[in-house]
Length: 177
Image 1 (cartoon, rainbow, N blue to C red):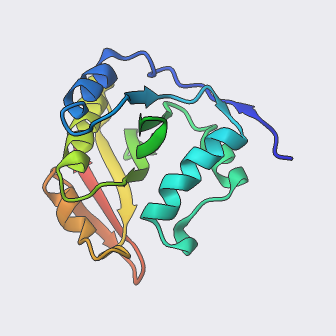
Image 2 (cartoon, helix red, strand yellow):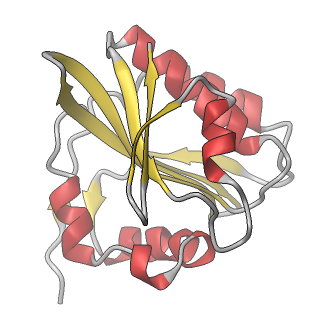
C-alpha cells in the first residue's frame, strides 16, 4: 500500500486558473472541472497514470514515489482538467533557482486531444500565471519528436521558448518572461 501525502498548492485558488477553465469550456462537451489534488494517493496516481500512459512512452513515466518527491517542491502547480471525471489535461511544475532568480520548471504537460489548440491555451495561461508570480523564466525538458510524431520544440517555440541545451535524448528550452 502506498502512503498518502498531503499536497501544498498555494496557487490553487488563483482566479487565473478559473479563467483557464472558462476558456477551455469551449473546447469540451461534458462536465469540465479543474482539479488541484489536495492529497497524493492511489486515486490521484490513477488519474495521473491514465493521462501519462496515453501521452508518454514507458521510459518517460513516473512511479508513485517519484511523483510524491516532486510534489515536495516549492511553488507547486499540479492540476488535472477533467471532463466527466476523465483527465484530459495534466500540468505539473514547480519553482527552481535560475541565474540568481526564480524560474518555473514545467515538469509535465500532457493533453489527451492534440491538434485542437488546447495545449496552446494551457501554455498561454501558464506563461501569464508565471509572470504574475514574478518568475524570470519557464524552463522545460522535451524531446525532438514524441511517440505520436509531434515536433515538441516547435510547439514550445510558438510560445517564446528557445533551445538552451541539447543532448542525444533531451532538449532543454527556456522562455524568458
